[in-house]
Amino acid sequence: MLEKTTRMNYLYDFYQSLLTPKQRSYMSLYYLDDFSLGEIAEEYEVSRQAVYDNIKRTEVMLEEYEEKLLLFHKFQERIKLIANMKEMLKEGSPSAEALKEAVAELEKLD
Image 1 (tube, rainbow, N blue to C red):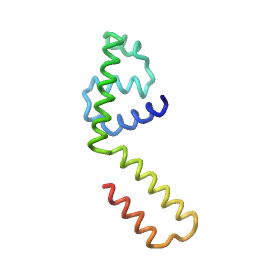
Image 2 (image 1 turned 135 degrees about the vertical axis):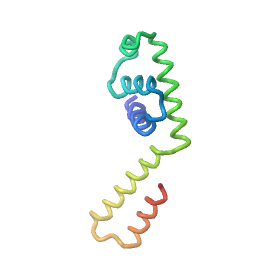
Image 3 (image 1 turned 90 degrees about the vertical axis):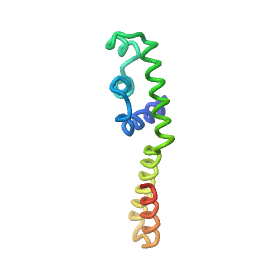
Image 4 (image 1 turned 30 degrees about the horizontal axis):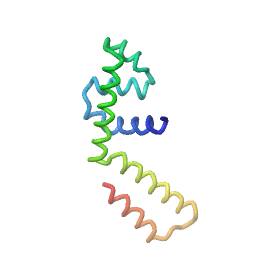
């Protein structure tokens, strides 16, 4: 569950501007502020089921955005490449060729 929450938080960060204000609010309260479905329902004077349905539809939308735009995937790849570059530097003088390859991989992501 924690893995899903972390993923949704990242997807929300990347794609929140593509959501409606109500979707943003529900997702923010549920995933970032850790509100329960009941608490959100009470806040908006709707049923728990309405909140649940909205959150589930929004999760699907965020996954579809990621499938098409790959912003989170590219972010993860950048993190890996930067970590590899730092490791090369820690181990001593990396070869110019190794650094060029790492930079080329970073450039491919954009």
